[in-house]
Length: 203
Image 1: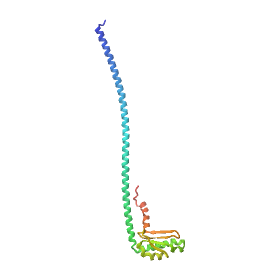
Image 2 (image 1 turned 90 degrees about the vertical axis):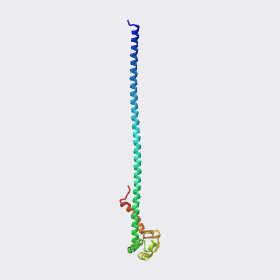
Image 3 (image 1 turned 120 degrees about the vertical axis):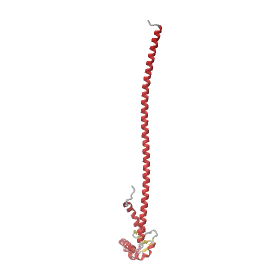
Image 4 (image 1 turned 45 degrees about the horizontal axis):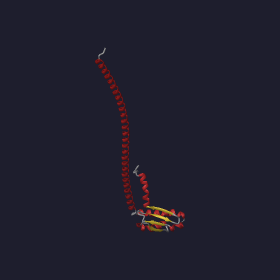
């Protein structure tokens, strides 16, 4: 038969074993819960990290796109300004060449041919209308009025201050016809040709 002391010792041992089992069970549950919470936290972190990376990537792409668009726009503006400067220089030189041309005898021949061309165009509507034709020239060409009248026939020659480079413009209100062979218009029409053929198009 067990003594009181042995019984107490055995009871204490059973209590300690039970307590250890409960402790171990609680620790296992805590570790399992910790593992679940850790996995959940890791998953949330991965998801949040992915969202952050995606958001930041989008922001960086937008920033790069804006910068590229700004640089492209600035580059196009610079190229356009350069193209315009080249075009301006080309046409200033052309105007200077035309000015030199108007000081030659060949220019008088040009005016005579222009007057003949106007007469040929207007006479189709009836020779009786030629006298109502007004031929406009620049002030510097007033001395050529007799030459123009000889080529065209009966007409009125007037100075038009808007004609700067030379040539002439024939108008007949009776038949509603205008023939503009001024050097100003001829040069102006070359702007479109220049834009299409100069190779300086800005895409």
